[in-house]
Structures are given as structure tokens and as C-alpha cells.
Length: 315
Image (cartoon, rainbow, N blue to C red):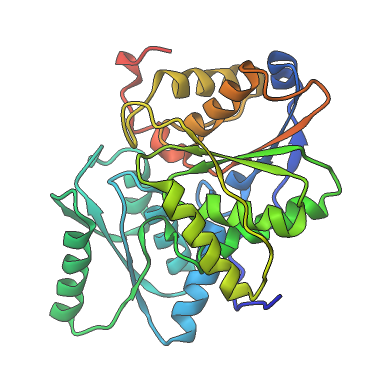
């Protein structure tokens, strides 16, 4: 396979270990891969993607990057952190949706001194037009990173992650990952097919986008970049979005509390809480045998947990 350029930003490989209390609770062997411990800010899956995306930006001669997401976007915060480490200017052009006050990830953006522009819109077309306007106003060219870093290049970060899992020497029957913009899911399914063809990947959808179309298309384009002709499976998608993207769900909140109580690990309301709730759902439906090994990929996002008003939230 072809190797593409990337910049080292995270501390990899991230730890993998068994969760004994959760395993007893769910009646199967539950493991975790701690991509929240990759060494940048509060960690998370975006760092793997940014190793490829920012390498491409540097190679093309850009010194300004812009990206987008919701107000509490973990991806946006990590883009600013990684760009800053590389001496690149970063502007975050975010949807004015969710918690815009100086809470959660907005605290980290403030501490970094990154410029944040809020746009009152539900359309990413409006966001990208605003990016163009900002760049033209300042007379600069810029490198545009899509929401979540989820294009064919960014998705390669999770092909790398699956290579790490395979290299651990531990067999996994199932791997559960969050699916919020599609890139992590696509890279994980593709990477597992390349390096662990007997392992099944479950993608917990935390948004309502048509991932049955988005994820296979990203897999196809990422496979083309790698110049691999591996057969691409149909992704196993489970709907855990609940009341909406970035809106806490009862199942997600239960999963967050369970993980904290049993294992002392912090999940978040937008991504990992709902993603782990998908694993819990499958376990309670009897999808896993007692002897199975099921790996949960912790994709970060803890900053967003602290933007929520938990005083009025039920578990």
C-alpha cells in the first residue's frame, strides 16, 4: 500500500486495556483504546486525522488554516491546538449552535488565544462562504479543513489506529467507534478490513446524517489514496443520535455515569457517551458472547461534558 505524508502530533500508540468491572456488568470482555490520551489538549480522534491534514497544508505552503463545527467542537479546538504547535495561524468559524459561552472547549480556545467567529446558521455553505470572506478581507490564502476532518485524507488516521490495534497482538471480535462526521468510522472499517479481516466494526451514529452513504464513499476514496483493492464491507451502523446531534440522550448519560462509576473514565455527551451506549445496547441485546473481546475506541471530547448544565439533567 502507498504511504502518505503525515506530521507527528500525538503520542502513539495509545493504551489498550481490559475493563474488568464493565466486563462483569455487560457479560463479555470489554476493552478500551484510549485515544483520549494521545497527548494534545484533552486528546481525541481528531489528532490522528490532523497528522495527515496539516502535513498536506504544510506541503502545499499554507500558513493559515480554518475549520468549522458546532460551538463546542472538539475537532475545532484540537485543530487550533495542533496548528499552534506547528506555528500555523488558525481561525475557527463555528456554527452558533450549542453552548457559546466560555465553557467547555471554549475555555481551551480562549486559553490558546485562537480567533473564533460564530455564524448564526445551520448551513455549512454559509460557513465556507464566511471563511472565503475572511481570507479575502485579510489578503491570505487558507487551507480549509472540513467539519470533523472527515475527508479521505483525514480518514487515514483511523486506518493507522486499526493498524495499532492489530499490532497489539490482542484479538478483538468487535470494535465500537463513534460516527459523528464519518471519517473515524470510515477509517476504522477500512483499517480493520486491511489489518484484521475477521474483526467486526460497529459504528455508533451520534448525528442524523446519511452515514449509509457518507461512510462507504469515504472508505472508497481513502482506499484509493492507499492504492489498495481490499474488498470494502457494508458498515454496521447503529443509530444512537437520540434527540439530536450534541444534545444529551438518556442512553448516553446512563453510559457516561456507568463508565465513571465502574471504571473512573470520563466520556462526553456528544460523542463517546452515545457511542458507548451503542455498545451497551448491543451487549444487552445479546450480540456478544461471554468469551468475546469487544474493544471500545475512546475518541475524546471530554471538554464538552463540562459545558452542560448537569444540575437539570437526569441519569
